[in-house]
Amino acid sequence: MSPGARIAAYIVCWTGGCLIFDILSAIDQAVVDSVIILLISLGGGASSR
Image (cartoon, rainbow, N blue to C red; front, side, top):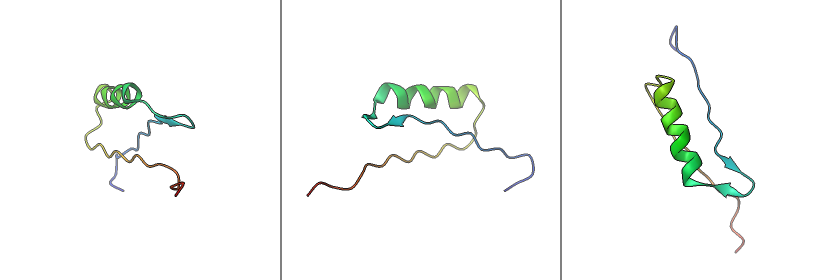
């Protein structure tokens, strides 16, 4: 990790799923927090098939 770098984590998914409003709110907050690089990873549980 680069000197002076920091990690900001925004949790938006809960047991009930991920609401688009929560995802967009986290992105807005990352902008307010001056995040330069934003990685988004959304995953679900195992398939029920």
